[in-house]
Image (cartoon, rainbow, N blue to C red):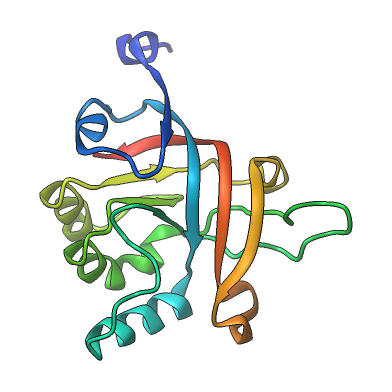
Length: 175
């Protein structure tokens, strides 16, 4: 069944950093084609980021100007920019999210629901949670313009990777 919202759903082409006024125009269900610099982080990377912050260190990237993508990229096949980059379940990052929001995190990308506490904090800090469709990781990899291991290479797929993406298809889940 098609709802009125389906008929009114908008597509937004947004580049990071996303200005606050652009975030305020988004509605749940809107499609976002995201471009810019994104950092991947899963469980182990989140633990280390919070250890850095707790130790008084700054992260080596600006949380206000980028996005954290909850994924662990697959190895890069020969002749490609990146291996598959499917989103991982976001609730696993919920224990680490509020301290990152407090430090300026504005954009998170993953899949699935968030806890009610994290959902409230996303709204409180005027941030946004975008979801990517699971199961299309090879297609999402085609949106990667460049990729480099950025932090903690010893973590393998859980290392922090710096991705530059162009028109990464996402949907607004929490705003």
